[in-house]
Image 1 (cartoon, rainbow, N blue to C red):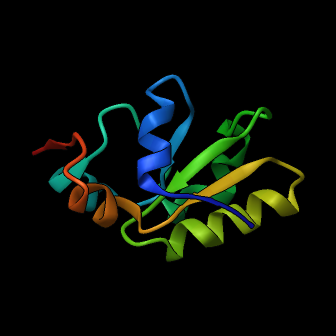
Image 2 (image 1 turned 60 degrees about the vertical axis):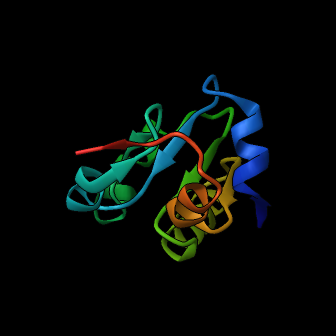
Length: 99
């Protein structure tokens, strides 16, 4: 499984496809402005929304996103797990939206 640190992800900018697999209540608290929401509970039904060119997958700490990445790899899609998730992103002081 490919992984990326939040620092390296941030350096890529907002022109990438970043998918947040957390649930809506979690997103309501804090989110990365350009992330697309596909909750893990809906992921199997919405996997076709992940571009063939690949995506970076994020959750709270990295566990759920790792499951989503594994699922995408089984479908033959390119995906990268964001190490530490939104928790690590916030710890680094990177930009978020709240509320």
